[in-house]
Amino acid sequence: MNAYVFPGQGAQFPGMGLDLYENSEIAKELFLKANDILGFEITKIMFEGTKEALQQTKVTQPAIFLHSVILSKVLGDSFKPDMVAGHSLGEFSALVANETLGFDDALRLVSKRALAMQKACELKPSTMAAVLGLEDEVVEQTCEEIDGIVVAANYNCPGQLVISGDVDAIEKACEVLKGKGARRALVLPVGGAFHSPLMEPAREELAAAINATTFNTPTCSIYQNVTTTAVTDPSAIKENLIAQLTAPVKWTQSVQHMINDGATLFTEVGPGKVLSGLVKKIDRSMETISAELK
Image (cartoon, rainbow, N blue to C red; front, side, top):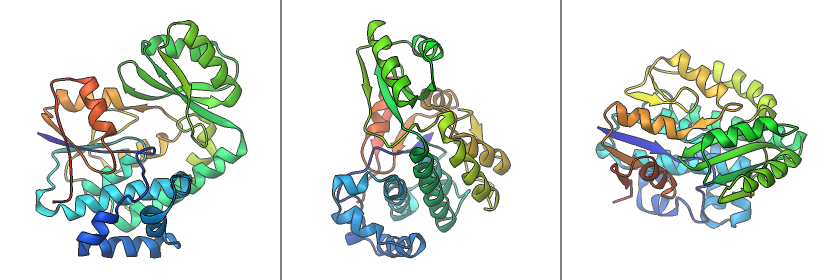
């Protein structure tokens, strides 16, 4: 079975999507439509913008979504997922892939999510840090011992966990985790504490937009970040998508469940090859490929 996976924030790069725009009429049409929906020329930033311009949350999230979804549309009949999953933001791309959401509605939700998260980031100084080389339980226990808000946010693969919270609490946690033998505990260049209680204002805003949007019955299961198991019920998909903003991304567990349910090939659709690398670290025997414009 072919599992299609879609990357999240961090996979962006200057010039992303330009090859699609130049080589496919379908892609060109969708990119121009995206400019209209968003109310600004995201194509200009994606194709010609600097790394810094692409790092603004309001740009990054729709840019990665567009790259993934437009690539999947260009692939046409060869795009045949048996199951899908997305890492954080990538869950919206996955929901277009299995026809739960249409392109327009999904892009509007991604834009609202990005703006709401940006606002939440500005309310309080917060950040994230990558912790390498420790058992998940050690990291979780350390987070509980630190004063302030600090939680496990991204279970990326065994031995790689991202924590999220107040700037001071994250810095303190990094010190303690290095003392406990972490190979690295490194503060990340992100705008705020994604997938933590500090995203609660964004969660409330996104919930209203999601609840006002029609979600269709999907063509195949999505393995969502919050529950990690196969979901096909549109109302459950909505709930999990809302919960995702303040809950951890359980990528390791999601991939393991996909493998247990019969996945034999993981196809990454979107910029970069980060998820392919994580899948290999979760299960070395898995075959991974990156979808590319032929």
